[in-house]
Length: 376
Figure 1 (tube, rainbow, N blue to C red):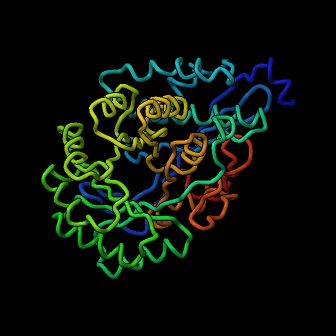
Figure 2 (spheres, rainbow, N blue to C red):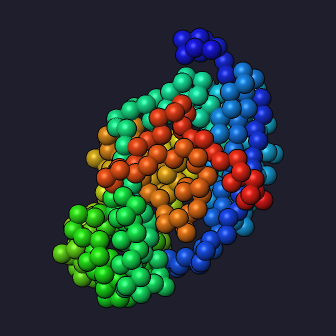
Figure 3 (tube, rainbow, N blue to C red):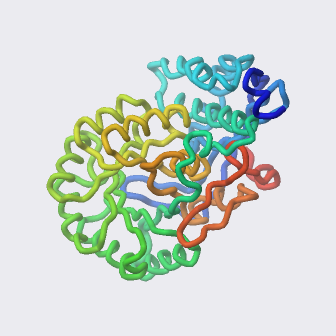
């Protein structure tokens, strides 16, 4: 069917299919207060009566992966099967009751919603023959790609080699892990990365809520001349909005946060409390692209830039669609083998820029053999 035909025709959802993946990592990756040794995801497919299949992967949960799958098949699929995929808002609202169970962590339901919402959007883009970033606004067709790196356990020489690896891959920068050592130790690690990477390489810091206010301010002062692009989640969660506001006021360093929020009210409060310059709301944690786009509109009204926590396969389209998008985030291939292996048609990075896949929907062709190898 042509795009014109779809103007009145429904795109009826027939079924939801999932394939869970779990890939062991080459080593344990340690941040400020956490560690990871697996990369997990769920490939979700929305099958339609018209033969179009929407497909996306997200939902990075290990121990709770089975819970996400149960929510998708037992709660979300019955809510959306039979509905018109073009009625994305109606499908999203139909899935929302899965978040009302007060005895279950709400983020599990919003992650399950994100899996289905993403696949629905992919089906819509494919039906219209249009990449989602153009459907959502089409502001640009490439964005800077940065790595999340600088994990603990590496010497300064190994950190320098890591930065060189990113430069050789053509990446624009690195979001560097801090908050798991003293500000002095982290500043020395950060300085080693800056020395190795050069002044034209974007460096951001991410404490994952690891510092006290005093420690966060001290770190900023120690790296003051090292061109810190922004400081992400600098302070402990117990009073993070007020403490992030104070970091901004005391140092002048832009602050980013929002990945831990699963609803618009949390984003609203971060902005209204003066806590952030950049909102890195995560569509794959917070109920999908439908809600992320609402958060982006809210942020724009207050001159707050948008990032996206990880998940470049989703984030690239969202960030490219809007004028206030910043960086697409990936990992070293050892930390996220999925992005570097599961996408058969992943476009090459050039001069720090990641071209948004131009195919319809998310524009991704997933490697069936890789999925078969690592499916749970």
